[in-house]
Figure 1 (tube, helix red, strand yellow):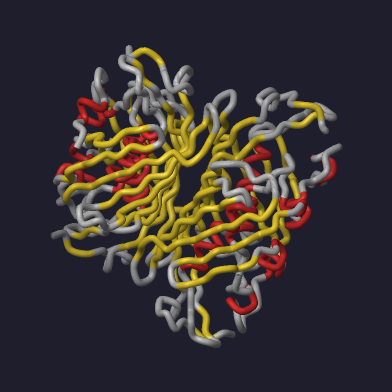
Figure 2 (cartoon, chains in turn green, blue, red, yellow):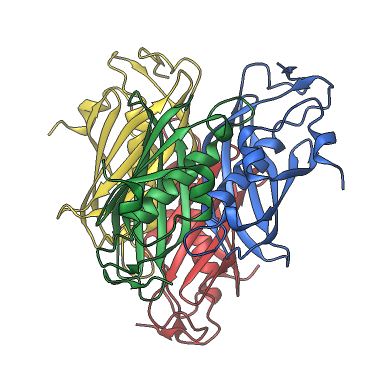
Length: 146
Length: 146
Length: 146
Length: 146
């Protein structure tokens, strides 16, 4: 498995990524996969993985799927316009795996879908997102890292 | 402002609530308000409040709006079936305020809407959720705290 | 009540509007209201108003709310990027009234919410939409009618 | 291709199905496919297939995917709780093909996803729906036709 720090080379994970602890384990044009080893910090009042954790994984996997940038020292960014999540199962813990895929769109707007499987391969959630590129990020070469 | 620990009396905040740090500041039948003092831990790669933080606040505010329980030592629980969020603005930090309202549904299924304002009163996000009561939680008296 | 043909002056209703029979009864910057006298042609297999009728009304009311154009002979157009609908009640017939409101967005992208009431004032559905202006339609003066 | 009237044997198509003209062309447990030969009656003000047509097809294909009933003279029914649609492309006419799949859920609540392809195989829209069975329809044998 490719390491997160290789995938995000040169770029620090976001504050929220560090807080939740998910890792980017696959990343290519139009596709990204995250993994999260879910723990007590991720649970809701009923002891299940919080819906907000699942929506975050879908949003993030979709966003990464639209921002693959193979050029060292450069990065692409999107802004989420809308996000939906349908909870198809219940996440009782273990490693969750979220896949985001770019499904359509044009030069500035991208549409994606995502899904989350638990460690046993059960489908936990599906979702859709619409994203807009930040200026400069429409192109594969993106913009320089800050 | 009513304190969170009064509102959730007898019940420990969830793991994810403690991790993110939002507080329940108003709670009544069909309505709940959360506040979050957003920080660097809540940000995405672009330095804005992560979409997953906003979806979490909407999901949680809506869920609380459906589970007010005025009976000491008792609690009500819902399961999120679906959640949508439309990002109407950008959250650049400060205190975010999320309101959830029950809008319809029946005995077992409840539908809610939510919105988030930033400290300046700008609308940051709107959302909708569909929820199902856990067994026993359909009634205002809910179930005993574990 | 202002007549539909006054509101859409110079512009023919769309094919789908004529098929369904809804009427634009209020239209101003950031807000539009449609009415539909629901009939047997609008029903699903269970005899209720079809969910697709309700999603159409929300999409259309929201789209009109973003395309008010007070200039004679000119028009504004949007493309729907995403749409959500939460069914808060059941529509058993009668006149349905759908309101669309612009809630946020920027120069090219607009976010809206909508809701539908039945003749008794019951809330039947709520929804959210994200829209993109066609070229030229970002401005209030829009583009010439074809 | 199996004929619509075979698939819906004994049951009249709904009023809205007859109005729009879509046909059920595949139907089995957990999966349904509809086709619509799009025409001028299905278009929006810009001359494209109206978003409401696409949301209707996704809602309907998903609903059928949850209500396959192999028992003659019997039928199953669902109520849509929520529906989302993300428009991944633009439908300029021709035959549209909508597929609905059941993705999860339990005894009373079902979650589905749908997608629409145009005649050239381009992805036009994706969507998700949450449904609740009417009483008696949880079971494959459903209820007697009225």
